[in-house]
Image 1 (cartoon, one colour):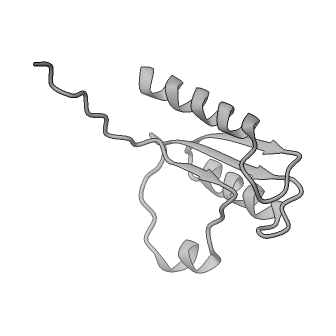
Image 2 (cartoon, one colour):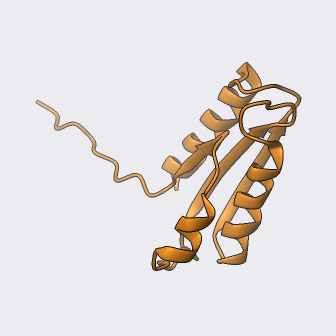
Length: 96
């Protein structure tokens, strides 16, 4: 019987999310220069402003993370294109 393959996922993703300012200021930062991130956001998001996604991208890039940022002409939703892009990104990272 084959053992199941277990992956330790160290490639976080953020889909229509943000990092609150208090987290940036009150929590100690850990090195992220070896971290790959997928961040996506809808340009028309009426729940979480698109600018918050841009700020998250800039924040993590400023810390040296390897960020893939994707924007979509969507509201607060995960489009089929977003799902496909995330899947491709994840499969690429799992192959490495």
